[in-house]
Every structure is written in structure tokens, then in C-alpha cells.
Image (cartoon, rainbow, N blue to C red; front, top):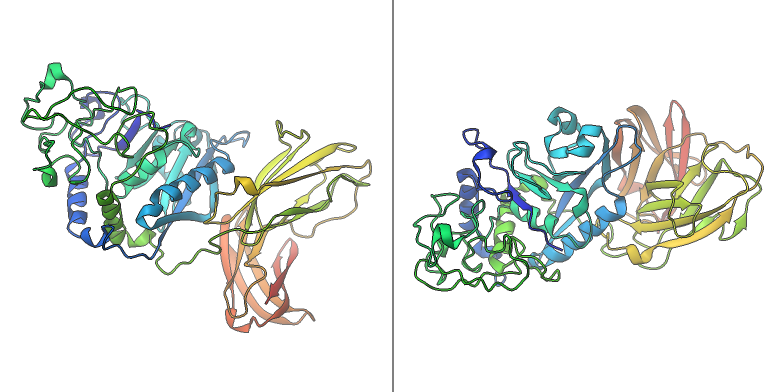
Amino acid sequence: MKKVFLLAFLFVSSLQSYAQLAGNCGFIATDEFMERTLSNKKNYEKHLSGNRNQMVRYVPINFLVGGKTNKSQVAASAESVLDMLCRLNEVYAVGNIQFYLFGGIKYIYNDAFYENPGIANELFVNPYREITAVDVLIGKKADTPGGGLGVTLGHYNPGKDWIVIKTSEINYSSETFPHELGHYLSLNHPHNGWDADPWDASLHGNPVSITSSPSNPSVAIELANGSNCENSGDFLCDTPADYNLGFGWNNCNYTGGAMDPNGILLNPDENNFMGYFLQCANDYNFSDGQMALVNADLDIRQNVLAVDWTPIATEITGEGSINYPADNEELSFYNNFELSWNLPSGATRSIVEISDNFLFLTTTFYGVKNGNSMWIDSDFLAPNKTYYVRIRPFNDYVTCTSDLEFTSSFKTGLNTSVNTLALDLDWSVFPNPAQSGSAVIVQVEMESTADVVMELLSVSGKILDTRNSTLQAGQNTLELTDDILSAGLYFVRLNTSKGSAVRKLIVQ
């Protein structure tokens, strides 16, 4: 459900404090922000629905999720982030805009960031930011740096150029994220100029008697007949005049009787994402002009536009299954083995849950894994116990996958396995199988910076290609040489000072 406390964008002028803003919920657009909107408007006609290029534009998002320093809790589950991204893509599809994960989901384990990422020490956050992606910070709260604005569920900070979202809004149903992405892409509220001062007949008259907007005198009062829509409100003519009538209104049907200075009743669009109306049954939308404007903003945001990027898979097909241990299998040992599974076609990542409860009410293990296996070490599971595995497949672009989950169970034995793993890395090779002549990506999650030698071997063990790299802590992406990958079976080997790990690669 859309919430009243959606926050627009931070008022970053150093000359005006947040305490000067009336009300608990709104912001006033800075002149700089409105100039950006108007500048984009000069070039937005080519993106109106009748003129819009049908090529989909893919925009990377860098999710930074806060966690407690001791790693006991995180502000949002991976499933919730995937569901939120799924909803975002459904909303923005009408404008031929799609978003995708930039290198997976990153976790920042720091108590201050976990509690209030928007006001956390920026020096701590900066190493995790990406200049080529939309930075989205997720924490228990979404307070603004200046404070004094009441409860905030999310905000866009143009000074930092990041979005902050509160834990409660990380789900499929909330409209906070589409709203804040709108601000990131230069959209104002339809009630621009009334952001901190919702219409009140006793203050503003009815018909409205003031000559300029109460929250920002530089914004003209928008007339209901649309005659001054180009230079008032949100500067778009297909979003009706709205004097922040949704603030405090308790349903999706406005009947409050507010009249513009000419005595004409206002008829706001209660279903617009950028407004403040509630309980519209998730039937919210962007106007054609708004979609054109966000596309015009992307024209100047080339740092986040990967125009030549094509998703690894536009869909995930088939069914996944647990490979080992098999369903209901009883092991003779309880540790040091590789849990492996078969991903559906197109999937490259997995959310893995292991529980001793078939309803997954408790969690023994929870994590996001690249590829289709993980190592169960000596301290992981208990002997002589039944465990349940649930896996949700996805890739960087396809995240609407809750219905593709697959499960199994197994029982551990009493004995200790003597198997050991030479190198425990979270890494994947995809696509796999790959097509001859196509690029093959190797993604490696490192716990710390280390020198890594990547080798491509033939089935006979001949080294065909070698890459020496210094990989940083976190997600790293390497690319295999594509001009030597003819059809056949290969092996990819990673060598570090701690040992080696090998993955099979099939080229068709």
C-alpha cells in the first residue's frame, strides 16, 4: 500500500534548514532541481508514447543493505529486494525502462548504517557505491540528514545522488521505491509548491486566494483548466492540478471540494505514483509525460545507462532440482560435502535456505550464491538430524521468481566426513552451457583482496588461456576470451595462495 510519508527529495540548500519547513512529510524542490526538470522537458517530446523508441533501456541498481556489525541481522532479505525490483520493472515497463542488479546485492555490516543509512558516515559508504549504477541504501530507518521531518519511509538525496528506503518498504506491494526512482529521474510531485503546506481552506481560501504556492513562492498556483501547466505544479500538462490533497485524505477518491483561484473544482489524479493518495489498490501509474521526462533524464545520465547491455536471460524457463543430497537421502556423515542443485535455464544465482523446520520458520543457513553449489563445512550441520533446503533461482534481470522455488530434504548421519575443499570460493561461470563465440563471464565473491590466476583448460588438461588479476573484497567480474571457445567441454580453474577451485564449462 502506498504510504503518506513518502518523501520527495532533500532540500539541500545550505541557507535553509529543515526545521523551517512546515508539516512532517513534504519537501520543497530546490531551484536547481526544478531547473533540471525544465531542462529535461526541452528534450522529452521524442520520448512521448507516440514517438518513443521501442528499444528497452536497461538501468543498473546497486543495492546496499545494512546489517548489524556482528552480522546477526540485516535490514532486508534478498527475497524482499528481488520482489521490490520485480515490482519496479513492472511499473516502468510502460516507459521501456528496466532495472537490473549491479553485481548482486551488497551488505554493509555496520550498526550506524543498519539503523539509518541516509545519515551514516559517508566515508564508510563510499567504498560500496558505484558511479555507473543507481545507489539504493536500505536500513531500518530512512531519516534525512537534517531531521525534523517526521517519519520518513524513503527519500531521494540529490546532493548525494542516492536513494534511501526503509525496511518496511522493501517488498512487492509498497509504492515507495517507484516514487523515489521518479524523483531520482527528475520528477516533481504533482503538488509541487504545496509539498510542506497541504491545502487548508482556513489558510489558503476556497477558492484559493493566494497568488503563489505556499511552500515555494517561485512556483505559480496551478489552475484546474491546465492553462498554466507548463510553468506550475510539476510542469507537466497531463498530471492534473493537485494542492497536496492526498496528504491526510483517507482513501483513493477525493471529494474534498478544493477549488482553484478561478473557482473550478480540482480533480487530482489519485492514482499517480508521485502523489500522496492512499488505498488505490496498487493501481498506481505514471502519466505519459512523466515517463517521457524520466527517459529524457536518462539521456543525460549516461553513467547509469548501459545501452549496449543485453540481459543474460530475459526469462527463466524449466524447473530446478536438488542434485545432492537427493530428496530424502540419508547421509552417512554430516559435514564436509558439497550441496549442489540444478538451476532452471537462464538462472545464474540462487537464494539458498537450509532449515530444520519444513516451514522454514527457523534458519540454519541463509545466503545468496552464484552458480549452483555450496560447501557444507564441519561446523554447519548437526549429526542425525533432518534438514530442509529451499532454493529460489534468479539472475540479474529476472527477479520475479518466487514461484520457481524448489525444495528437498535430507538427513545427516553420525560420522564425520574426511573430505576437504581445497579452496572455498563463492564463484560462478555463466552462461553455462555457453554458445560458441559468445562471451563467458566468471564472477567471484572474495572475502578479502587477493591475487588470483584464472586458467581455461581443455578436457585434456592443456592450458588454453591464463589471466592474472588482483581481486578486491566483494564481487568481481572476469571475462573469458571468447574467440577460442569452440564447441566442447572445458574447465575453468582459479588459483590462489590458499589453493585451487575448478568449474566445468560446456560450450555448444
